[in-house]
Length: 364
Image (cartoon, rainbow, N blue to C red; front, side):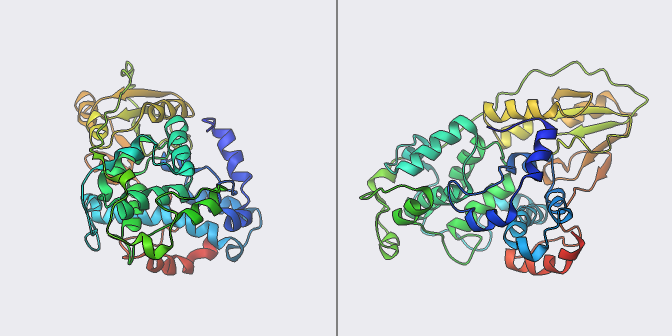
């Protein structure tokens, strides 16, 4: 479903229809780009996508919906940089009411009885993909209908997504649950039918919106369990490091094949067990990572901690890209390629962040 060839990925960018995207993105068959796995893995950047489109002649005002969706990604990342571990907690206010800190078993089993939901969950397990609108539906069912705290269910979804990005995932779940937004997000069966082309009735969501706000939890969501998972990491490769050259470190959030590719260097794909213990991902995600890393010429896999590399090669200069998950790295830090590099820091809402970004649209 997702190519891992860099040239093909660039062609996907070139074939985006941002105007059609703006009109149809909420529909299951809408003109979505499916570029999120490549953005999340740092293969391409939000700015790269935006500038490709403006160079093709699109004016920012013509594709504002598309540009805003790209900007949401950078907004979540900036929030993570600023709040750090606090994004794992309710940010603006407590999610309420919360009846449990687990995940509805019928969500995990894809057995909610809502056809579009169950089909999408099974598809997630098979392909690692889920439409963004469907992600919102499921988060709303878990948090606002089933009254589960957002964290465990967000971990479940993150585990299976090829575009697993903890900031985008966790903060989106909080936005739906009302702990990072001014109100909770709800959707009923009629809404799901409209955007996913079903005609289902008599589900626990087949109600008027006023009825969805009731305190009773549907029978289908009452049984819950704690989602737990582990990452199956591959064996490490033998590292034949040239001690006369620097080491460029690639990781879960940076697999950019263009990064300083003109520099002669050792290039190491670092998979830290401690990272994946904290943020476990599926076998599908690991397979995708390994395949897509092959776009980087001469890359070598190392499964272990950064400190092991540092201890083994104390006289070599390490290079890495900035990210909240690698603040223990030591060496020369490189800036990520932001859509609006002029706008940094924490903004309490996307609206405030975007108002600042609008001043720099002309620079795309």
